[in-house]
Image 1 (cartoon, rainbow, N blue to C red):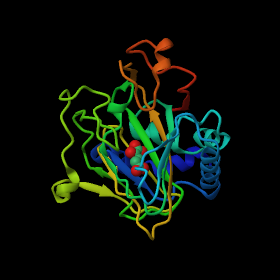
Image 2 (cartoon, rainbow, N blue to C red):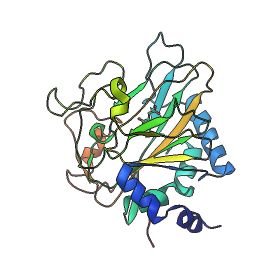
Image 3 (cartoon, rainbow, N blue to C red):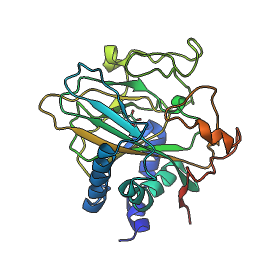
Image 4 (tube, helix red, strand yellow):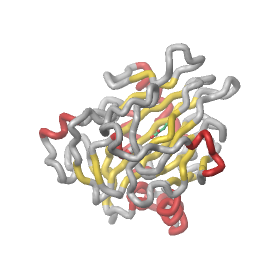
Length: 278
Ligand SMILES: O=C(O)CCC(=O)C(=O)O
């Protein structure tokens, strides 16, 4: 089956409507064994050669570690091959209703077994240097992930384009927008039944796609859980423009301001177009 045939089978009107409605969808068994293997090798390579952006996002006394890395696709041949050859870019383009799918960045997220560190509820776009509505991130586990440890979303929270206060994950500092300048994220975990939380137990091969304004978060991992190795790849559509910040974004793209004007499209070798509609 060609890549286009695979994509056409998966991206139905109903999937696009679900993405519009909820801001997150789970696509079961999208990836084949070779694609999962590429990511497994990519993650091994990434962990054995971490970039200068690598960070530990859990406390030193945590019983496991939550580690992250960003923007390594240029030096990681496995990630690069996956980004260019897997169906993800085409699917993102279709879900965003965009004529192109432009790579924004890759992001590694590994929670070891028994990591207490939660991923606090947040939206991604306020951490970034972009504006616009056509966005799509993939969250791709290469290990089975239980319903408890999976990424969860507040259905529909991307609609209305409301930006909520981004804070650092470990000590909740307002490092990006000044204190008081954006509405705070409610304490969702204190009153979970009051929110339309969605989330899926997933197996290798399943992928989750979500809008960069959808509120999302995750619990830690439990003692009997396996490690939770996740590769994330993020795509931008037609309407996305550069919104340089006066502060350091996450990931840090400040050097790009030398090459891309405010309000211009993200046309740059660091953000290649991976897919175009026919
Ligand atoms: O994997 C996690 O725990 C967090 C993932 C996340 O926040 C993201 O992919 O934007």
